[in-house]
Length: 74
Figure 1 (tube, helix red, strand yellow):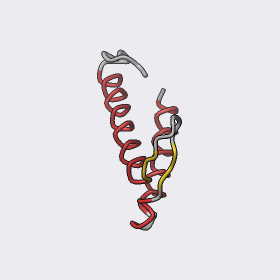
Figure 2: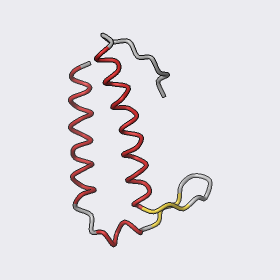
Figure 3: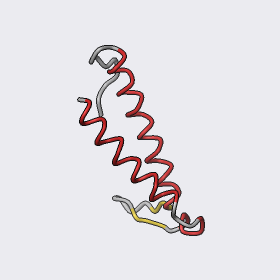
């Protein structure tokens, strides 16, 4: 488990580094999601961070409970 968490952490540090180097004006670029909805790069970044925080809480819960998670895995 520790190796998976370390890999996941490393990957997300790389993503954070990429996001921090994107010029502010580029955050307005639009992307089309499935179903035809358009969202900005800023929206995608914020949504990813919110999703990441959800998983961090799951990992913290599992580590503090000795491998048991109280919430559903998604």
